[in-house]
Length: 336
Image 1 (cartoon, rainbow, N blue to C red):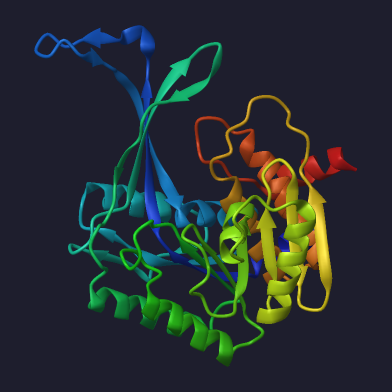
Image 2: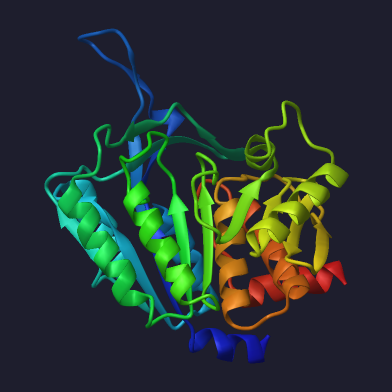
């Protein structure tokens, strides 16, 4: 791990995508009241935590890995949530905010997460209160983001695209930005560019793809869940057609990676060690795959690292966790 840590310390990675504020409200059920005015239950908050989420979860993981320089390419609103998001990002070692925009024409993407704290069991998450953008990202904001991608393309060892929004064209990864990234990929065919989108990757140029099993099924037009063998075959076909790597997460079954003409590698999931919270596991996989591959790690080893990172993260309750190299090493030692 020492050699890997040294390579990570020299890495430069750009994370382009939808940065979100994860705001946690810790609720003490023993302090529950009832409103005199409405008669409704009052949940008393005893602690408030704010951290970067979505693409921010990826940069949190890159920072935990000790990646030397991470460039955040995205935007936040000129609002209180944006202030908290920028403060959370600025606190991360190695993070650069030169290409992170503040604009009063967007609101800060926010996940509001009320958590009821229980002394004898994991926190209980209540219904979320989210804040999003529902209108198209303004052209001038898109242009500034595209300029950032073009400027950074020759300065970094890898690029991660993280598309978190449900409504197309309302976030960072718009059609125009995807086209610009496609131009970069053609100009720099050796540059690692790893894309992940919750709306699917059908409209993306040929890049390294990371997706879950359901997203793969949608991409290949399947109308039912895919078996492991069907996932293997579909990932191998996609890798050969696009001439880029394809990664598929399969929850408690494991993680799979395919290289063009290089076959498929599969890593089974590690055993669960008590209560789990799967939020953030996929982002930990993305960050670890990108860092390992950008640092020259072989595919099989990158998959092992990403699988161990996911195992670390799912055992961190009440937060969107991260995995450091010492934590990953400890999990890998248990596997061996």
